[in-house]
Image 1 (tube, rainbow, N blue to C red):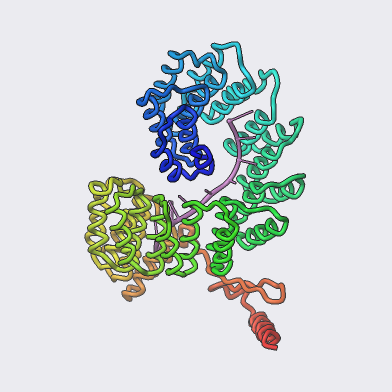
Image 2 (image 1 turned 60 degrees about the vertical axis):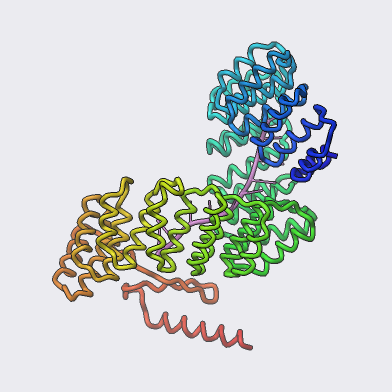
Length: 537
DNA sequence: ATAGGGTTAG
């Protein structure tokens, strides 16, 4: 029963049954440990192992590989060594499975030398030993060693090839080498096809990625998710949704990962109805959803402006990560609900949820949005002590905006001058912008001076400064800056609008009258009205 | 032992 439940990764239920059991044999403990690894909770898996020891239940040749995997996943080198000692004491280091587990564990913890010692020490090796060692080298970025071992192998299986293809394609961005390996493979398996596609997509070679995707003989959900995700990341969410639909129509059942990519596409497009449809689809088809899917949904609802659906989804979540909370705070902020964002933040604090720097940035920007200056300042002051987050440039930048908006320019200036982080140039830029709205000429000039010292005086800075002078009626200063700009060969990037009519692209360029023929404008307006007219019909 | 996932201000 426990084994069944933990296989389904329903660990809450498994623990419930576990607590009621009287027969604690090794098999049951193994099931619990394995279940926790599968639900990505390696520390909990390790905890169960220690409890098992305390109850004097002996581990077997199944226990050690899985608990070693837990150590590797949680990067627990100390714990791993403890188990190594235990393994040697009980003679399990003669077991090949256990030894392979040790090799993987040491590699995950960055100790490739220790792993290699084990690898060399025993004559008996199988493909898993070789592949584990290669995988370890790849994970630690030791490609030379990996390649050496790969060449020394007496025989290679699809794992060996796939790992190398993936390593060159993704980790190193050396797609040419990946392709070379891919072409030399005796049998190209699905995994390598997918790795190649991801490799091309990573370096922006969309055409190649698409070609391979079309070419591949068999596609699985992962192939589709890679492509959907790639389109979202390249700003073509429409195509991503089209692919998602295509996948469904080919009878491929989406899983949680592919669904996340589709939800992101909806978020980016503001396609609320499509997003809702996916949510219902997941529920109806019993697709195993998790907090990542839920978080993506909250984000989507927020970006589509459907606050209530976002709130409901968030409140119904059984498990949340920092990102879930951050998404909620950012979402409330961008929709103008600063007070509620603060309430969520307070809830986080009450519940003792771990916070990261983005949490603080989100809450500060929510304050900024809603003009909650006192609250924002209060939170900022308590960042390090109360929340354990060291302020970064982004936080200072947010603070400068907050103070600037409230007209407290002196304090803003003070903060930039005393803050411990480097790269203050964007902050002087923010202050300069605030000086314009607050009409503070002296501080504006001071900011520009700082920007010059930092060699961050791009044309935007001068344009802003000249606008400030113009607003004060200081025309001679305006001219001085214009001249300075032309002398330095600075040219303001001209703003332009592009409009497409009847398949032709028309560009309107600001301040550039030479291309600005009246006939052309008339033509555009005429075609536009024609279009609107026919649309009405 | 190998392939795909969520947040980022102005």
